[in-house]
Amino acid sequence: MGAPLLEIESLRTYFYSRSKRAFIRAVDGVTLALARGETLGVVGESGSGKSVTALSITGLIGAGPGVIGGTIAFHADGGEQNLLADLERYVDRKEVDGRIVEVSKDEAGWRRKVERIMAPLRGKAISVIFQNPKAALNPFVRVGEQITEVIRLHTPTKGAREAREQALDWLRRVKIDSPRLRFDNYPYGLSGGMCQRAVIAMALAAEPSLLIADEPTTGLDATIQSEIVGLLAELKAEIGIATLLISHDIRVISRLADNVAVMYGGSVMEHGPAADVLAARFAPKHPYTTALLASIPSEQNVRDKGYLTVIEGEVPDAVDLPRGCRFYARCNRVTDGVRDRCAQREPALQEIAPGHRIRCWLYAE
Image 1 (tube, one colour):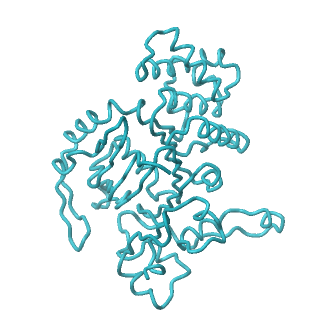
Image 2 (cartoon, helix red, strand yellow):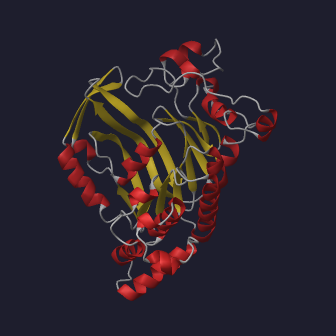
Image 3 (cartoon, rainbow, N blue to C red):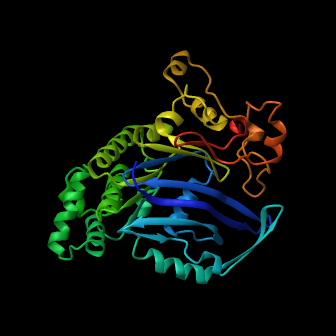
């Protein structure tokens, strides 16, 4: 696609469960890369670590200990910046048999460090579209004023009148009806779809290098979802911004993404071109990806009124992840030749074709 814009290496984000007296391994060794102009789709069941990965990138993890390992290299404005710079100074880890069992972290000191790093980047170089658009907007400030504030804070435009015209232009570009009227509306006076368009306008108003869209169609009805996906597709073609797109809806990902990462149990199971990863008949493919694609209702299934295909079993407990393959207990493709390895050793994420990597013992050779 082009030069890397974002490179995530061995990211670990843990939370501590006081009731279980153990760590919740929400993100456990994620490695991803995003190129300039690329849209990387991230899919997986709830609890797979998608949103926590996005929050780790933006430094918005609130609960402790939070990020405890890894690097996030952000390449913008001709330089490279590690968003987790000096993390090791704030964290002490104890490992037993390769597993982290104890973490001591100066959380207050680390949060101050993160804010110094992220304050110049949030809203300007990195923007986020959150799951709940109404919660992302300030209910006591008019929608137009919120977009204008972004423009005046993060672009060379400082004049109120010029910023207002730019905000109106962005409302037009996201195809919100009656933009001058909506400019003066409060969020409670807008529908969910309108609020989502306003949030998209606010996220793009500063023309950031990276856009993180976390479930941008969640909570919207089917018609509005389709309109929002179409809008994102148009803006992608127009602006060419690098986008990290998180969604449960594989059809949204297939429409917008250039590459896809499939996450499960806090780890990346498969990463490759969207045309290959999301093509039901393409092989090789991780068993989890195959199961996800099989669970999508088809036209034939609807016509025949047949049952939906489900993935048997439960998502693994992030407190007690298995030592071997994280999908082993639910996998229906385990063979006698790999069974012991699947149960005892976690496979590496290895390249099986140019740009296509899979974490599975079936492809170890």
